[in-house]
Length: 630
Image (cartoon, rainbow, N blue to C red; front, side, top):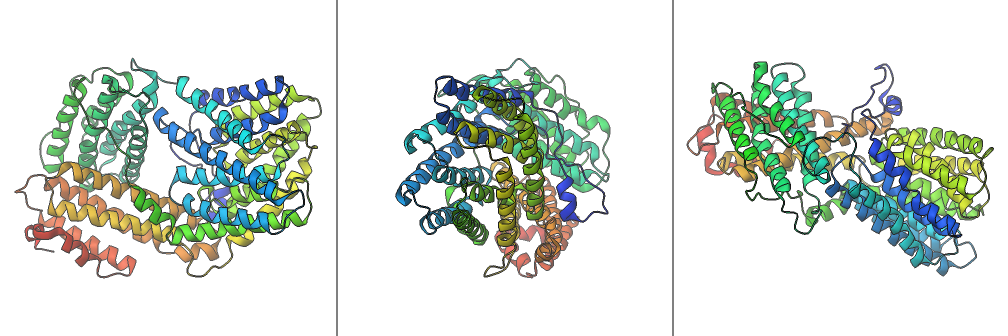
């Protein structure tokens, strides 16, 4: 997996323009490129069988699965690819049924109403998380295509063909080994191994950076590595009785990394530089995870203070976990539950996003229907992609979409000069499928590749060539999303940022309260620490996206970075306190207590809520007697 790093443009550019030039970096995932090319095999089989129109929903299902085929483990890909595919199939059914109900005449009422209501629900659900966002997008796009694309197949068959295309790529993801894997373990666990090994590497990097200017960045990288490993291990089992020694050992190795991460965070918080040899132990553990071998002797740090003692104890427990090959280990579970997810969907952020999706879909459908355009479904389908906030700030999405669509239409026009026939179109689809894993690094590049693929499928469906129409529809969609995206709605803007910050503050409340009240409960403390840091990372992502909007929009979330910074310092201090309070009789040092008091006050002042300190303190219970300096 490559991290979501970006090429940072010149600082002289405004943020809303600089975001357009940013792109992800990292090694090319050749296994994903191969899967993308092989995803066209079902389309080829259907075309050779003499049913090219039936290949369109197959190729669409494979295309969406290819877009969702991101770095990660196989078990996580089952949910990441499978659940949105089911949503897309349901969307095709609904869209086809709506078109049948509307009849042959163009409807200026029924279709906008149905798609608007569906957009309201899909937009609200999309605010829950990445998989829910993919589900919302696929159900909307598939519904629009089902209602507008003139395919002879009935709705139920379109849905099955869509699932077949997505299922084929998901099967390739489960069966084919990933590129660049090493070690003696089963290749079905290569994503999990790499994710767990990345945690130990991030721990080592943080220990090296302690006391220097890169400590905060390394701590954030450790949080990202822990989040990825947690997701990689929390998917469904690959086999019914997947209680193999390899799987149990991976869970044990991940569990052993959590105390190491806690100790490394506490040492970095102290601000003292550490000897370079102190990172040798975590690096050996990372190599052992990748190769499936033994870690060998681990150098023990001097047990000078609480942080170093915690690191030494964590290394000892990790060594024992690496040597234990058959013991039962608890499975890593995904955090959260359905109730908080529903609350998020029906909260302020979910309602705001749902309303904007509904307005975009209903407006664009009505406009497309009134223009009597043969490919009217392109306009609402394009707005569904453009209105997604997780693809970047609004202006960045619109600019990238415009450039990508024009480039894709030009490339398609050039390709169609020497190429003709259905097999040539299948070849173009295969090439586009192979390029999608690389093109997802930038929205403009992804748009260009998808444009070529979609125009190829239009010809396979028997419709006339319409590259120029595609450009016009995209420009209309950009104008619609720009208008609706900046349209003032009842209430305040910036609900997404505020909701993310509120979630992060609540998680910090629970973490600090538990550390002060029950520091001996290591398991619960670890879960709350993970939740606090993960929520903080999500809040920072929302803040960064909001800051890159146009200035009138970005100003509505001004000051959010100050809250996030105060919250980060509070969580780091809480982790340092947890290391000192790991024994029932230990008392919190006065320096730690003073830092807590300062940071609680700073957080309350940044949020404009002076009651935050008292609220946290009430959760601490009797433990506050040990820290009366506050």
